[in-house]
Length: 111
Image 1 (cartoon, rainbow, N blue to C red):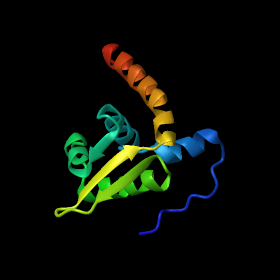
Image 2 (spheres, helix red, strand yellow; image 1 turned 30 degrees about the horizontal axis):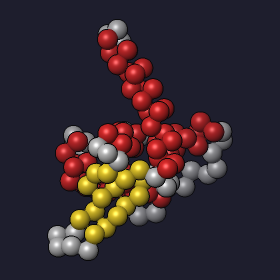
Image 3 (cartoon, rainbow, N blue to C red; image 1 turned 60 degrees about the vertical axis):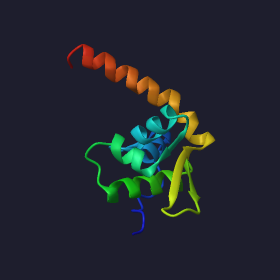
């Protein structure tokens, strides 16, 4: 299935949120970073409660297309696939961390 074309981003915020917006992208980047920068597909599936296999695969492909994660396939049976952050993906971690801090604060305030 082809990626839905949205046209050119209208500003830098639009560009950024197209790359990490949505329900799972920022969480995937965060989880990979927290696990020594490498996670396997099954590990991500367990961490992302209520995600379907189809959605996880699609989201991982989009993150890979956007060069935020890299995918390494080992020639084994069964196949072993590992996902890690690229340098560009690592640049996003401080911002995701800041969002997490904001979220914790809001939760404590009961908002």
